[in-house]
Image 1 (cartoon, each protein chain N blue to C red):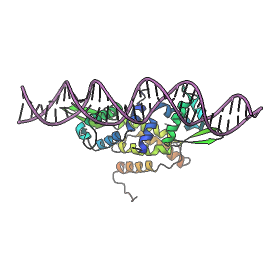
Image 2: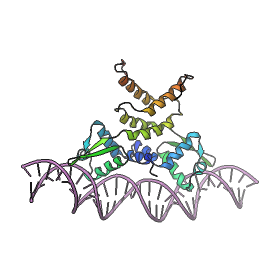
Image 3: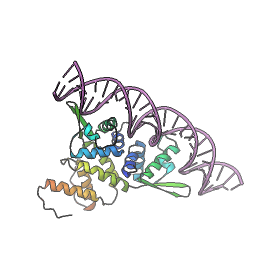
Image 4: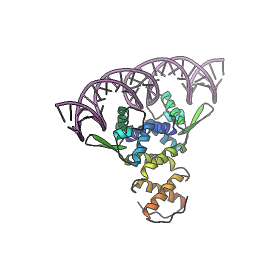
Length: 117
Length: 117
DNA sequence: CGGATCGTCAACCGGATGGTTGAATATGCC
DNA sequence: GGCATATTCAACCATCCGGTTGACGATCCG
């Protein structure tokens, strides 16, 4: 019932919450700033943030009177790993994974020359 | 509103539906057979299958009076790619991805010797 | 034809979800 | 202290969701 996958996937199923996560990719944000671009009450956003935090996708730290929201991409790994089980039996066509690898190598191999895409 | 990610993630958020997907990994199945291991009415399972089909995670083909359910792992790729955006900016610690790669290489390199884990 | 099997439809139910508003709680500042 | 800011709490609402039951439409088979 309380399988972590349940809460993570449920949290990801809402477009507002995914948008919030995308915003948090750039930087940590205060609740009010998260809410600003949305046509929704602050309380509504606060609820969404609580759900994201409940799923472990973000953490919130209160400093002074402002509560900072921080992305926790680790929580996505469980879900990602689960999903991989379904790609694995398929013939290799996961170009996205290839791109991921390239980024990995580029980062790890310091200065491996990279020919344009 | 009808972002495909919404429906895919929502479909994945239910443990029964994930279990069904896992079952379908092994082979295509008839609706009745899908329902068999669950302590749930056939109509209940039928609804779950409709949701999975709506998300594109499975397809259903009626042959005679039996309706066959087939896994469509392609639908997962969209979601998988979306999720990767959140792992990518992180330092490399995605051991699961490494395992995935090993499996890939093993499959692709035909008989590359593999030292034990 | 008549019966059994396969599956969905329709109506219903309780509980969760996404959203609102208004009051309440902290905290910072003058 | 007193006011503004930041955030949540509580109550409420409409809707969706997961599940049931019972009736129904197809299809196979004797």
